[in-house]
Length: 451
Image 1 (cartoon, rainbow, N blue to C red):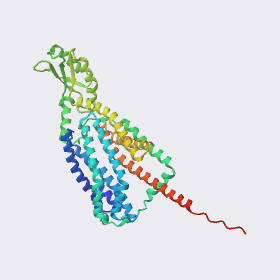
Image 2 (cartoon, rainbow, N blue to C red):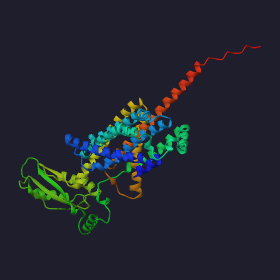
Image 3 (tube, rainbow, N blue to C red):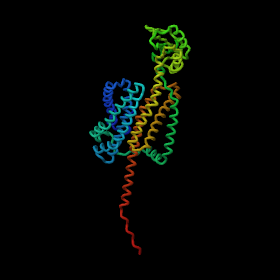
Image 4 (tube, rainbow, N blue to C red):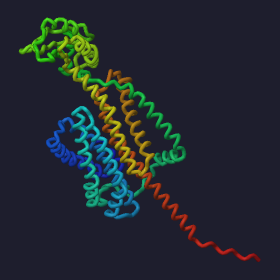
């Protein structure tokens, strides 16, 4: 809905308002089919939850690519071009930027295959396939539709023939041209200040706290915790197993259970349940805190695991399982992924920008801008939710989601702006060279003889 309203304000055209919706709908259908095929062929393990992220990403980049093309098409029409010539001109001018932006986004998403978590290894290729389909549609389907519709594309508005004044943006551009250093310093410092708050991001695995207070599951949990220990709803299993396949010495179970019970965060320990062959035993821990809470995660990750591993008799191995243990391992895996995926994606995107811009310096500035945008977005989210609203933490997957959207949209905008700046710079240089050529070719006037 917001996209339709925005396009209505920009173009005042019914067809253009509906064009991104129709294109994204068609692209999502094709992309879902291709993702399903790739899922069977390469065992991506993509699940239906990807569809929500898929739609948001497709609307974001799909609308961007269509706008890139339409702005150049409308610009050429205003200069007096015909429909076919204007479409060809728009593809010539915007096609490289669109293709480069799409390529950079595809690479950024494919970098998620380096993740140690299967959910991200599935999301990355799935989104890359969707972006590829969107890119093909933006460079083929959209120009074809625009060629067929011609100037009827802008119906019912006729203001597309007039170049808007854009006084605010003109003043901003003039000010930036006069004092680029001031603009760069101010914007950079603001983004950097927001990015500092990203360091305070507290990943939370507590899904119960995000539920409304009036739903039955929340009320049941609160009622349960009024009468029982918070962790009684989901005891944490600790498995003690023999390393040599020999039966365990059950006389050691009491000492092991006592050590577990003394660990921080443990309310009580159920008696051991030996396996049928006696080579393993199950100890169930009732935690002091809700097993899906952040405090339970910290307790299991630290003192409970330490106690289990330290108290395991010789020749045995102790393993702590359950929901908080899964979250603890998930947290470690994501911290590892952040240090691998983000740098790998940045390196490949820089190579694409270097090839597009034919420069070794500009990609560093652009990637710094994307990096600051990522940090500032995460920092602003931390300010709003953790500091203003007082939330103890934010969903652990938030940095990955911000990476997906900020990288996609930020890279698009950077490539669009820089490609247009390069084009305008080259055009001005050519015009200046032609003026110099005309002056040098003009014969000098003969001087008058003095009287």
